Length: 213
Image (cartoon, rainbow, N blue to C red; front, side, top):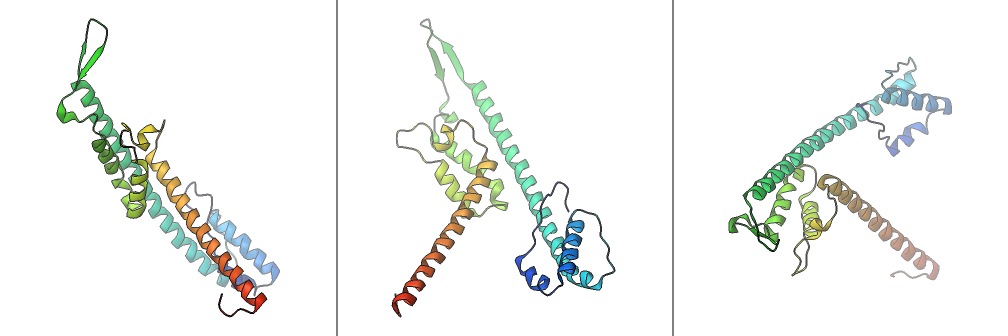
């Protein structure tokens, strides 16, 4: 198992093999699997355990390799995201230093900003936010990122801030993970609802003898 990895996938179709095993052998196989994923390097002379465990072992290795590749991508995306945020902070600091502040006798503060700074241009800020999503293209689907961007940049015609800017705190990486998780849950719920609807229709056909419902 990878360092700090606390779980693994055991595929449901394993039941076809386990059902054909005596209960004591099935128990030994489970112990063998758990011992393996906990890096205990189990060994056995039992031929049945050896034969049934080998394909499971190879699948676990493939799953671990895919996990390591995803973990590496997450890490690289996180670093790129941090670099983008660092550049944005640097740009903001430069703009602040270039702002000319003058104080009048009536204690009002006038801020003179160069036209090229576009400090109050909401479209420029939306563009900066869009660029900050580029590092995540290697992890998430382009359509998902597009929907995420459109949702968080929504604003009214007279609004001076878009939705993201109205949040007290906003971590793009964490928000994207939540967005992705919610989409997956929504797809499962939609699929389940469709299945239940079909099942209900089938029940009505059987009850009333309707051929086409």
